[in-house]
Figure 1 (cartoon, rainbow, N blue to C red):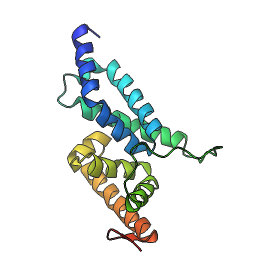
Figure 2: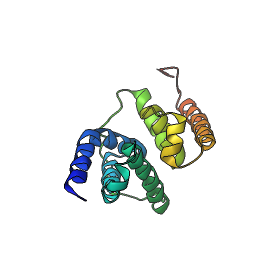
Figure 3: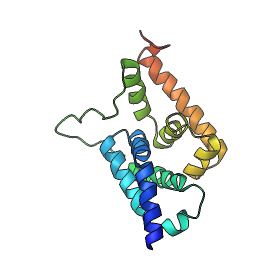
Figure 4: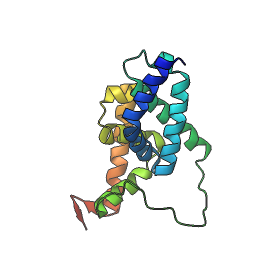
Length: 167
């Protein structure tokens, strides 16, 4: 990596790091795992920066790395692990009981459905951008979103959190 590429990469990281950290947290449901995911993605992106920088959307490339790595990690560690202590409360804590319920419901979605929901409603990407980020077709994005929304509705109804009120 030459000095110009290094400067461009550093500028990219400085400008996009907070947004990437929020995305990582939303993908994993944990701020620490999200930060690890961002670091891993940025390490991989730095190694390929000469190819990425020439593209129009380096952030999309990094997001795709994050989504793919998250799926790979999830597959490897999908089994429940017991811990001694309860985890800390998330640093991007939802502000009310309905938000708490929604985030808990989102955490229960399968990894790919959660990624689609996070990319669509948290990152505000279009279906085409999500498909490019996840490396799948627009039809897959639509079907994953539909299934995720149906499951979220069921989960939220089960918790009696409908229409902005706790029932």
